Image (cartoon, rainbow, N blue to C red):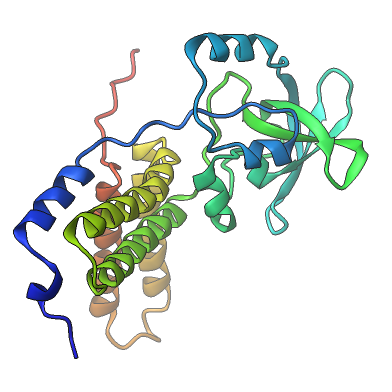
Length: 268
């Protein structure tokens, strides 16, 4: 029979849940190792003390600089040419960012760069070919991060994370357990869901560019409709549907913090 609210839920449970959710999650410090398998294995280890982090920073090898020579987005890889040795370094898209959230959403990773772009990176032996080298921790040449998502993929990740949270909360509330245990499980589910959403939000770095891209897609749809005006029965309805889709996307982007910003006037 369907669960009755009185079976599991009380005011004390909701108040403790809200208080738990309100606690800020700790920021995860990246772990620096020499191999990719170690990086993945140790990414959730406790962060070091200030002295240990300083010592580790000193030990970190210098970045290598190069240019993107080739990109295969279907296979999720690229080739970087070392600008000093001219050696070709293999880059797997999922090695650009080895955080847990990036690995969890690996199928959506589609870095925003093009051939010829200058980057800096760390190198390590290729797991499949010890004679070759692979790149990881890849950044733009000036140290800025490389966005790994298109805005539509970021929205998909955010929506999937919220859907998962809803299903998980239902499972927890449908179980026979005390309020404290339920509160802790819902808090943990919220944090797990929010990690992916926050990571997706962090990949959207240029609000105005994203909004212009969204509106440009509306323009393309309207152009296609008008181009085939004699083959479409209800042109006005089709145009309105395209507009509503664009408007809905802009509202979803706003939930991720993407809003149109006033551009500074160009100096003459």
